[in-house]
Length: 195
Ligand code: AP5
Image (tube, rainbow, N blue to C red):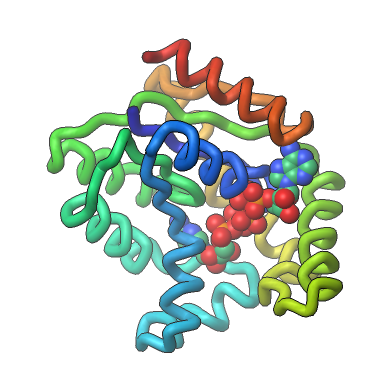
């Protein structure tokens, strides 16, 4: 089963994707993680995207579609893909459809994690504070200024995907405000509903 976890920054996409990897042997494709890995290993692409990510803006469609293409055409599909933080624009959504067709796969469901903005801010600022308290480096974009831009990018560029996937009959909504276990159980129900 191939699924998209869709939602604003801090909605819990990464947290829930990790659980699905552990519990169902699925493969997490997080463009955010791939871009951060490129940044920390100092590749040309990593250097190019560092400032954009730090400001909370979106990286170009071309770069992220290229990253996903590489994984879909060359990687192990495990028990299905979890797209985490991709697609984020209509162009990316179209490209994902084409890529899945090319590799003979399809999208089974799109799960929207719903969380209100004040909680998102709390979670992101909380994550930055936790990192600092543990003597680790906080994510460069986990601050209020970058978060405002990340949220704006979500509402402007990513939220149109809700209508796009609804029209395809693929969208399901899950309340992302419960406990991590509670949200995981609602995601499991949403996945079971289409399996
Ligand atoms: P990306 O890494 O995708 O970040 P994001 O979408 O902004 O979101 P987060 O990873 O912060 O949130 P999440 O929903 O995964 O929540 P999480 O589980 O971590 O993107 C970063 C940047 O890369 C972008 O701004 C852009 O520049 C670039 N980029 C990436 N993909 C791109 C694309 N496709 N196109 C263009 N540019 C792209 O949880 C957050 C916190 O909340 C954690 O501390 C967690 O423990 C906590 N939490 C989670 N669930 C719960 C819960 N139920 N209750 C309480 N706390 C919870």
